[in-house]
Length: 152
Image (cartoon, rainbow, N blue to C red; front, side, top):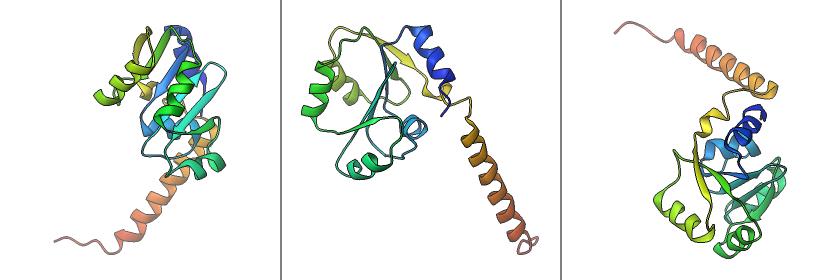
């Protein structure tokens, strides 16, 4: 993960927190793939809420975050302990039910729609290495299958 764009986004929008609801941003930030969850990225800390399917693996393998079990009660307590003004949210991935739930738990904030893809545009050195490795595997697979491909 490269935090350059994350830091720029926080400054540009004067964010107190960015809430990532999409799996791509959760994977990018935590290096853990989950199909569901809430990632709260604050200026100096990040918290990942996952349900019971992921809690054990997230506690062992998620990077850069504190991991908490997602229950409405745990999420409510977490949000009640915060006082945010400007809240960024991954606008292309939030569902209406998620937004309604967050609105009921986070009072009187300025919601700012953020395109999470902008965060992931600049690649870290390990991401570049993974991309190179994936390209080599794909090229090898193409070469291996070319011997079986014939017209018709």
